Image 1 (spheres, one colour):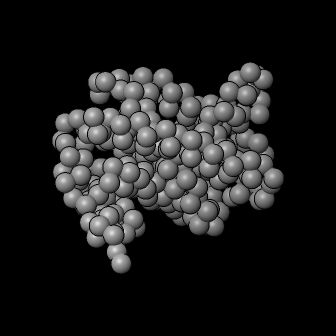
Image 2: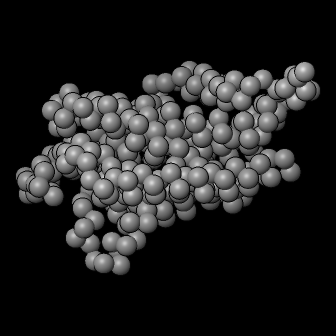
Image 3: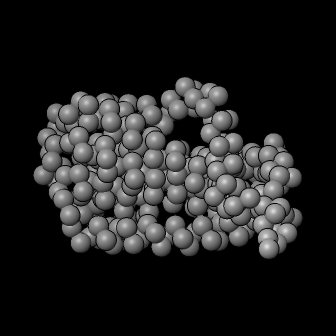
Length: 262
């Protein structure tokens, strides 16, 4: 016999899908304008910095500097697009558009809405890391099989920064406060996570700090797998990303659930 909860609520996968599909439909209505920044910014950075610096820095860590940059930039696309989705996007849906109020009128639980948000942001990380690395592979900057590996690490990166951004959102009282998060945390992380230069040669205290930054591990996974092959450090990077994501997701969903219900 089915209980009342099963009758009122569809299966978990159907509930997550409904949230994901709602965000997909809204986002794809203006796909060109929405997708242009996360797609073009890494390519512009590669062209502006990579081509310019290549005349002075031929190699970095034993590989051409363009290739060094190209194996890190797709992850920054995943990071920024997931962070925007679950910080500004979540806050606007929560405080201004009251989208969640409407969703809760449907047979959805608060956890369904928030998990659906995170999965949607991870999907954007998958798509934009794929789009960026595909262009780089077409121009011969990275090996073609990077197109297979990078999107899955982009998905993990998207999930990670979506969870972290959701946790940050729970502490934000005004939408302007996100400036501290983006300028004070994400932008420095871009420069100290091995995207632009290797962290191995940094002063020791900063090197330890770089190892604690979540973007470092995604960037190193892509570069190691695409260029150098298997290394035991990949297991540490994967372990760090999974544990970090699990912890911030639990706290983020819990705190945002409290705020949403209250």
